[in-house]
Image (tube, rainbow over all chains, first blue to last red; front, side, top):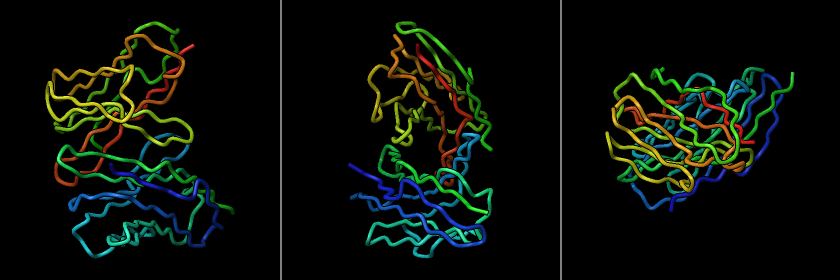
Length: 114
Length: 112
């Protein structure tokens, strides 16, 4: 069975600094995709970044980038120049398999200090 | 946004009563999902659907049933609500091209 582990229940970063959130997963599938979602206090789930497993290049979206290490089954999220609006829960999501299985990590609560 | 709505957005009910939550999408996505979110557990999959009348169980399906009679609607039913089903429920669809998950706004259900 697939599992997704976010080992940091809570993280804190100073405004304008850089923070990295970790995510590891366990799977025997060769074709899958990975996502980071942000959930602010409004509860809305917002896609931050996506990565297809077959792509070796790490995905980047503005201040957000990932470090995708397929062999190590690691998918960390780096947030550069942190802003107060980045404070939220962040969830790592693994998706794949013949029936489109989807497994979420338990989340990391990010606080941004002014 | 994929145009996903959920109704009701908030509901308070009593133990033992039936409850139905509705998810409606306007994107013609094939896959639809119901999750529940609880503190310390993240989002857990209850049921999902891969087409009209095609559904399957997720990680925490006990006490829940689903139906999908039309592509755009996915219903989640609690036949006899219990206090342990107090939670926030999210509906989601999966994009065809990118496999991205699109989420509804969530329904907060309280079972007294």
